[in-house]
Length: 507
Image (cartoon, rainbow, N blue to C red; front, side, top):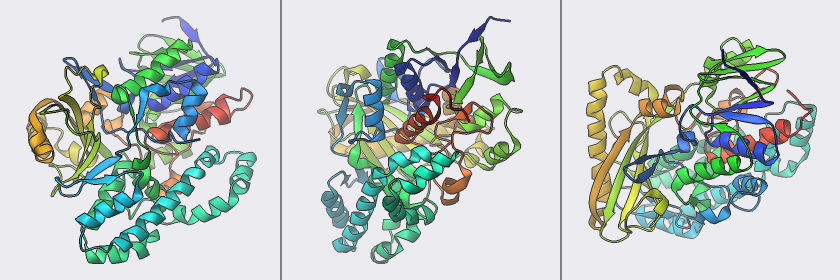
């Protein structure tokens, strides 16, 4: 048996949530070790290299850098380098037919005008009424984002803060948590859908990217935030890989310990603390924070959690995986300035659950990506796939191989149609599926996007950071406040401020 290493806190996983918490702990000189199973940090927001080119793993974007926003707060508190970031003022380009381009940016009037020019049967006034209301409520929602720190409440002080701080703002936003997006905005949507039923498809695909659910099931509050997040988009030099590596290297620079290639195999209670067993070492600690999906956490400690927590975990279901394509594009010039694009298809890729493809282009001349000239750009293409449907066909490896060829062909056709005359060549560097994600991230069934934002789940079924085991905590995209970089960093900030930054306070 290897020597037992002692530390105050073990953090499991170096995805964005685990990295963010590690960086906060290192900045404040806390005693911790972070254990990551794989050779690279970042998890779903990681990267890989083929030849000399660096590709983002999935369709991950950065938001929340506005004044007092979660990422701005995180960067300031940890002393991270803002100069590596650049604002994406072009937002997301939405193509309802795979060719036309509508600009979803901070410029709300342009977004409304672009929609009116495409959906010519819809009165622009009706679109304005819908989107001005969405934008106003989105602004109010972000003003209340700091209150997620106290939700779910665990102590009397949490309840007092929830029901006293910013009370008028909360009363105004409360109906948005109690009603679905479709129900809350039924009045505004009625004349729009009566004029052009295709508009329902636009809202569905836009919302699926960020909320992982439909307008009929997504709480209105989270719906408005998912529809307006393109107004505050940022690009990190080197893409999401550059973002993850910067947090990782900064944590090491501050003497934080993040161990790559060290997979946790088992967790058990021992000597008034925990023993964490990896394939390399045994660790003894007083606290554990798991940032991996809750299903993975449960497998590491199957007998540790109380029945109530286990039942709650078992009720939650991994819904979505991702199908991804990785391409090197050679353009006649430097290609499009706009980095993020959502193309809506006439029908989904085979077995996929979304009728849209999300394009993440690297920035022009991003030398960290290994690009040789301005005409070259790396592109990550992503779409949702229903995990139940995928694993029905998984037993046949031949069918998966054939299916990847079909996905590649369909993605290439969409790329060529969309970029048209600008494009010289499209070179494929790989197709990913849920099995690929499970292999390289160890996430349960290759799930991405965490738990879909759903009305009843958000109000009571989705767990917070408390697991029911004293000094054992859970963060990441399968706990509140949910999925996406901004949410998991918010969760890391909340756990640090409520628990780990207060040495005497335990749950």
